[in-house]
Length: 207
Ligand code: HEC
Image (cartoon, rainbow, N blue to C red):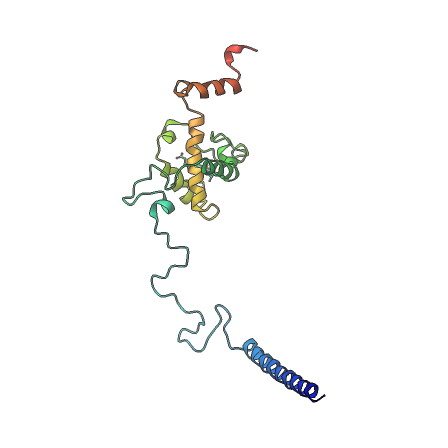
């Protein structure tokens, strides 16, 4: 039975070592809990200006805020002109996203059709111009992005509520909305013309 007793003794030593290690680890853990630290913007006697927060080195940019893509963030090109095309490919997804965002953020005032007769306007807010006037049909697309970003007259900026990708999506959708209200039927392909005639009752049909 000697080998068994040796094994028991070895197990006891191992258990003791483990217990010691656990104690030591618990001690460390307590140290970390009590480590000296400052709360954000706390007072400090260590720094000459009395503040624990350190001023940012000149030129510091927070991660994700570099905004070096001028066109994407301002709607203007490098020479300062309003962009005539969006900085991303125009896809069906982009248009659908733009329609959804427009309906949420813009239609309350500009109306779902863009005629400037949204519900907020009908309740007394200043009526914006319809998007279907020649002046706005001829502005470069960057004009939409720029005004969503910076606001226009009594309309406030939507830069904090709507990220730049979505501001572009809305701008692209605005162009589609303008087309939808101002398209020569003669410019449609025969197939599209047939589809249009199938969905819109012809005035000549007479009811
Ligand atoms: C609270 C109502 C309101 C909302 C919401 C609103 N707008 Fe406007 N918008 C206006 C008014 C009013 C004007 C005209 C301001 C003026 O003349 O002082 C205007 C002007 C504009 C103009 C300039 C039109 C021109 O005549 O040159 C554009 C472009 C525009 N809005 C786009 C948008 C888009 C896109 C959205 C959604 C992201 C939006 N607006 C959301 C009320 C609103």
